Length: 116
Image (cartoon, rainbow, N blue to C red; front, top):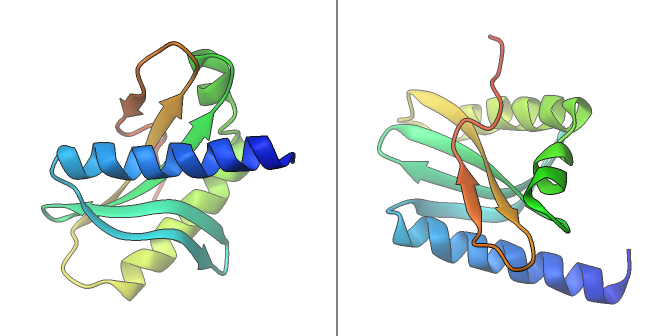
């Protein structure tokens, strides 16, 4: 990954954090390492623990499509792990924040589901 792409990814994650805070989410952590993989942003709203994947691509469709099934499985496992680390949450939800040039960021709630 090039340094410019890496820097843009960091910028997208900081913007995503700000967007979530403005929507009333409490940020619990960023770039959290779990045994199953990394969570870009871990947030909370009411009794829901929210695992947020941040994607930036050339267009919204490409950004959404970049969250492939294997990555979804890792995020689901990471979310399950984090539910064990935090008390007081009833559910875990998997959201995506998508960034593309010349468009507003898109917050997709329940971007994918865990089959428990």
